[in-house]
Image: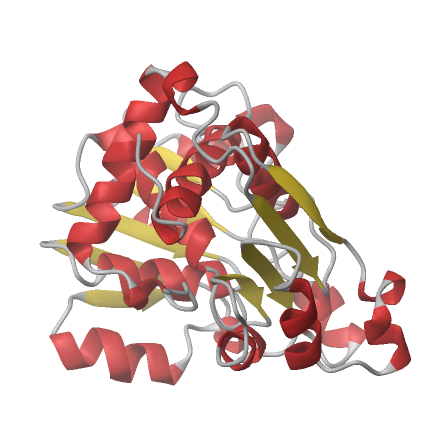
Length: 305
C-alpha cells in the first residue's frame, strides 16, 4: 500500500507515467468510466477548499466510483476532540482511499502511519500540495510539450505557498530548469528550500522584487496569492496583499508563448482582463487537476484499464 504525502514520494518515471495516463484519459474518457466501480474515496478536508475537494470527488465519480467525507471539521467528530489518527482509522473502514487536507504541517504523514487505506495529502498547512503539483506538471506538459529546458518565475507569496514549494521540488529533478523568485523581502522562498533543494543540487536561481525586471526571460509565470490565513497579524497581510498584481501592461515585454499559471483561488493578483489572453492557463489547470487525480487514484488503488 502506497501513500502520496510529498511529491518526492513519486519517482520522475512515475510522474511521467501519470502525465501519460492523464493524456490518455483526455483522449478517451469513456475507456475509464467504470474502472473504479465499487470503490469509494473519502475526502477529509479540515480546511476550506473548492477546487481540490471537488476535483477529487469529480475524479472518482468519472472513474465510476463513489465519494463520502466532510468539507469542514466542525461537521465531524473532530469537533468532539477526535484525533486525526482515530478519524482515518475509522474512515478507512468505509472507504478504499482517503484525500486529506489539514492546516497543520505533517498531519497527513501522521495519518498515513495508521491508515488502513492509501492517504493522499491534499495540502498540509504551508508545507506541501503534491496533487496540485501534478496538475501543474500536466498543464506544463500540455502547454509546452516538455517538462525540461525552460525558465519559470514564481511570483507572490513564496514563503507560505505550499504549491510553490511542491512544484520546485518536482521540477528540481528535471533537466535545465531555471528558477526565478519574485517576492517582497518578507515573503521570500524559505531557506530550507534553497538549502535542501536548490543549493544542494546546484540549480540556477535568482531572487528579485520587481516582476517587470525578469518578465522577458520567462517561459512560465506561476502567480500566487498572498494568503491571509498564513499570517499571524492582519497588519502585515494588509501591507503585503497587493504587492504583485498582474495586469496587461506588465505583459508588454513577455514572450508570446508565455504560460501563466495560478493554483487558485485568486483575489486580485491577476486582473480579470488577463483571462481572455491565450497565455492564461489557470482555468486549464483546474480541469487538468481532475484528470491527473483520476490517474493518481488509479495508481494508488492499483487498478488498470
